[in-house]
Length: 109
Image 1 (spheres, rainbow, N blue to C red):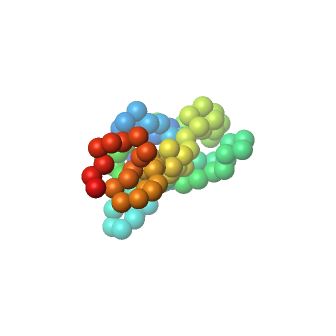
Image 2 (cartoon, rainbow, N blue to C red):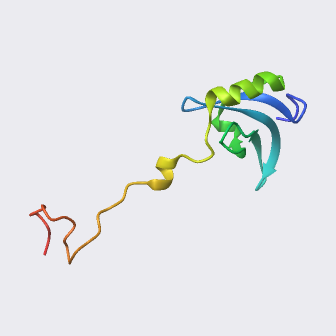
Image 3 (cartoon, rainbow, N blue to C red):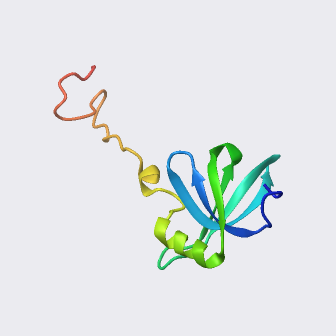
């Protein structure tokens, strides 16, 4: 990655899965693997954060000037961690052996 642009530089990064992130990018080696580091600055009430991506996750990188990069950061509003991922589905509390719900007559006793 270092051969493509002067580091660090601002860029809009398109990722597989229709995700887009913008920020200041550079390449770093982590655990012996070259990765793209994206430093996303703080926007309004959202704090800044850093994400790392492997080459196979990247669809395209568009180098931009800082002003354009900051506009892209505001537009895409990428979050460091998805609240849904952290919350995850919750199972109801068990009230007794084999009892997962009050209305389920199929419980194994």
